[in-house]
Length: 245
Image (cartoon, rainbow, N blue to C red):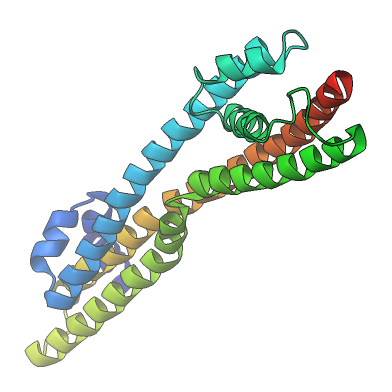
């Protein structure tokens, strides 16, 4: 117990003081690599976190504005299409644009199309499903971009930090054996420096894991909303073709 009581202030000074730079200076090559790796992963992770948070905020704002302006039950599909260009970051607006462009190009909204109504509805449904699936897949890839790095950081950083700590503790005990001194003052600073690697690994991993889970939940919400909107849009388009047919 006396040994532990003497060791805690020495290790606590390094950890609670957050003297990462001191740990880097005093660590050997392997320890430096572990610490710097965790710091790089942490910096990149926070950059991704800020970027994705801004991306989802913009998506939410534009989608809510698009729904309020264009999908309140008033106006035509063409009017909604023209207004959708003001919301380039809204997945719902992108789905509407792609579907309308596809149908306009194929001419299913035009008179004189050489097919009966049932065939036109069938072709329109297939076309809308195809373009909507393609658009949803593209938007989902955009939403999920860079999240794999957060997942990797969350899973790898603790092991990098643990490796640096184990290596540092091993080096501390080797130095203790060489010096032939059993004093805690000889062992404590080496262990303190080694534990900084674990702190660095956890500092990188914990925010990455928390925000990864949050972003994945947001991706699921947006994807669910796109699926629901696609079904509603398909019904609107079929009613439009049936009315004009």
